[in-house]
Image 1 (spheres, helix red, strand yellow):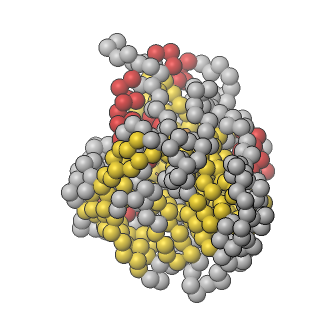
Image 2 (image 1 turned 90 degrees about the vertical axis):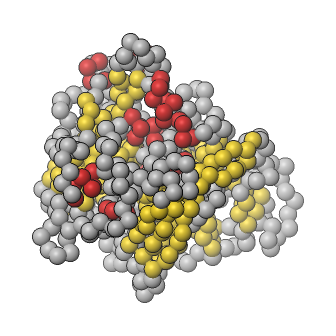
Image 3 (image 1 turned 180 degrees about the horizontal axis):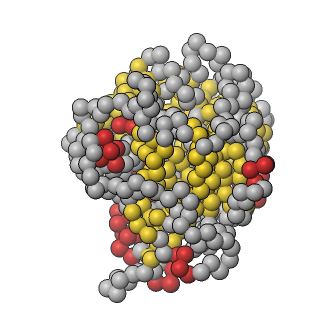
Length: 546
Ligand code: C2O
Ligand code: CU
């Protein structure tokens, strides 16, 4: 493979959206940031200069980073942040991923504007795409725009214990689209030739919302997810969670005209007050055809924002390709069983606080009822250099109490989590089954859970409580989808399996930023193996210090 070198300068730049200008954090002045391109088997080396006035780290979402957690990026998990004026070199080794993955800041709320696509083409010596080669490939990055300063959102929310504010618009490739004020002119436009097939590389980079996405009068064929191929799915809409990426074939086979693609929220948790405006972009057939423009470009019909059935009807179709070139290597003999509840919780406020969360309390969130506390030094350096008192072991392998996880009117004592920085130790090459159980402790929601350093097979899922006696008999061990971010259904569970063959410190968290901020995170410590090539690599010399 080839090694690609890039320079990323993180700095603030002025952008105008929704009728006003403001400074946002960018990479190289771009929003969304630059697209990285490579073939499977290549390496990418990125020199990151922090010229902003805030700490920064970058994460390569969907890249497994074999034996190299030093380049993974989450602040205080695998590295100390790059402070203003400093530089750090990240290395990505793309020997497994193929399709669309992405990169984003992993410090504070910086990822709101600091993100971009990573396109991994098939290996040059390999069998190519498992579908006819598309005419052209277009990144479609679903993002957001805030009128306020995004970086202040978590500290403002923390002051009151209430909900972080929602964005003022969703965006496609940085643009809200023609349904929003002052946004018509900038609307992202994709010019197509009639009769050609396009590969859309779609990324949900929004902070807090699952999205429905569709294209007016065009069928879509989903062929990849999270940088891995799937069996093709014909569909009119997709549901994509924060953190997920999907490869979608679009055939420009309609009468020449002006069509739009659009995305809108899917969330059962959103209140009535949220902005239901769709973000839009245009598909324009005018290159080789003349037509008279419709007054308004055709809009897709997306499911309503609270339609869980529509979300499930789409996501239940995922299957891995499971071919000779792209085999499914599902662990069949499990030796390590884990069961995690993921909950939104509440805490009492001290008497001098005026908390604006439900019942005058403050929000928290947890995994197995432990709300994650960010340590002052990153866990990876503490582990590698044996720095004491940074983290504790023995993250619980199952919930501290059993209860009816998805029941109504759950007892109030379940609301309060405990706090800690704990890691769960896995033996090298352990064969792991992990049940992620959503709960109705405060409110239920679809939680997109992301695991760093790995991909995993989603062997089962369902609504209600996981039933260890019956549900495993229904597992798909033949062609389950392989993913890096799985949507745990509202009031439901998923079962995932993976082989712990990547030693290091790896974060698992909900990719809904407010939940992460409230503590819905945990950390795996995967031990080194015995062989000379089964341990983590030594730390790079330029690793930032805390
Ligand atoms: Cu896409 Cu831990 O993140
Ligand atoms: Cu969540």
